[in-house]
Image (cartoon, rainbow, N blue to C red):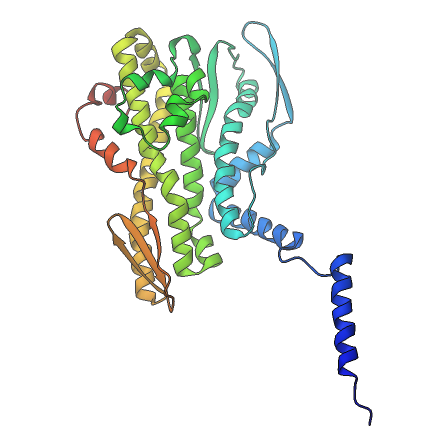
Length: 351
């Protein structure tokens, strides 16, 4: 009986591995197929758990790549879709893809705000006005609003830096109050546009709770879900605060413009709807965090506790303690000022 030449076998294996590495035979740790599989999974769970988000993406997908319409003054404008439907979707794993899908929903809501305006105007026989700030607020297939407000009554949000104290410079203050965004060109319309986009992105992440738990397990899934929710949920308080300050400033310094805005039914209804929808979502989110903590603790799959506004989660049989805030620190400061009578003069008109 002949004995195999072990050294020869080892040499041949080593040679094959080295040669294969140059010829591309050894698969990479993260293959294109696994990425595509995860992308398809994210799309599937979006459709399953967040049908309103999927409806928005589907409606945007169906919009023509290019649209033309005649304006009120006789001019014709041509508008192209700015991005593809899943332009902002990226990530190395399912958790990252879920987070980027939230961003994608947020950004597509901005694109839809502009692009669907032309489709709406054609269907309803509305003449768009180049001199107005116009857009389409989408909350669900049955709750949406076309808004049109003269630009000459709007002032840039950076004027609010004169009345907002430095201690109230929240996380998004630099971007949306001082920064160069649509909140400068379109003032409160830009703020409302962002308010509604943050609502849609937050709602998507909230509705993905089950997907997080399936993907990462009860303990890690809950931690990832809260850590991904907390920032955009906190945006509710920031934009509620910014918009109230804008209205208060307008009433004090531009009363005639304020009265016009108050009489603009579509704007008033859109603002009220976003405020109500987002407020209910935030309340539901906070209640769900506590409910999921109890379920986790009762299941013995991990331990969850809140200490000094921080949620701490320790998976079963793990020494690693994962922490995340439930809301940003800005929330506490904003709630304190909202509890005062400062905004009573505008609340009765718009909220």
